[in-house]
Every structure is written in structure tokens, then in C-alpha cells.
Length: 129
Ligand SMILES: [Fe+2]
Ligand SMILES: [Fe+2]
Image (cartoon, rainbow, N blue to C red; front, side, top):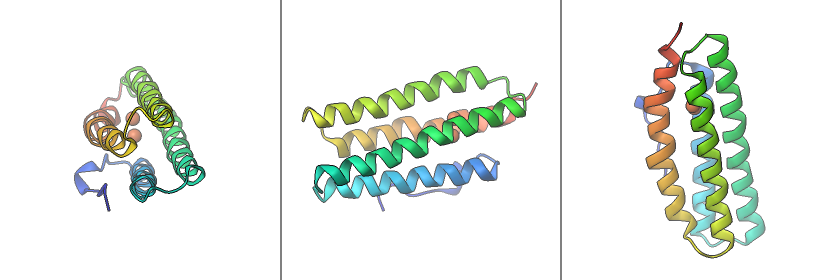
């Protein structure tokens, strides 16, 4: 498995942690499909699943931070938007053949999503008014 879940990624909220794991699962499926050179219809399906899981998760998470009155809600919303834009951009570039989707996915997972989970999601969870 490319992206391995680690206990240190737990934020302290069960539903959020489960959704994060689903994003990891979807990213692994996409990574394998890219590496195996699957046909583009399969790649697009895998990508759309990852995008959908991520999008749903971000919306649920924002709702949750709103409910608990997290002071970091606005920052979360902005960062979620950026992360989604980067994910879409990655796929656009891949379609144009100007990038390697496996490398870009690694970058997004390891330098963007995982640090967001470890630092910002955990912080937002505790930042109650
Ligand atoms: Fe999250
Ligand atoms: Fe988040």
C-alpha cells in the first residue's frame, strides 16, 4: 500500500478519522491504477472517487467545526478550497500529459493532505470558543 494510515493521524474525532482513512483508501486505489497504466476511463473513475470522498469529507468537517464552534473554521474552509483546487489541477495537467500523476499524488498526499490532517485538523478540533 502506498499511503499507510498511522495512529498519529488521529484527530480525536471518530467520524473525521474514518473519513480520512477513506481518503487514504481512495488515494491508494488511484495510485495503483496510475502505476498499472490502466485505461483512462478507469483512471478517471478512480480520480473522481478520490475527489468525491475528499469533497464530502471537507463539507462534513466544516459542519462539525461549525457545530463545536471552532475558531479555525474560516481557515479550514480556505485551506479545503485550496486542497480541492490542487487536486483538480493535478488531474487537468495529467490529462494534458504535462505531469506524472503518481508523483503529483504523492506530493498532494504527503506534503499537503497529511500535514493538514496532523496539524490543522487536530488544531481546529481543539480550538473551541
Ligand atoms: Fe480533514
Ligand atoms: Fe480539514
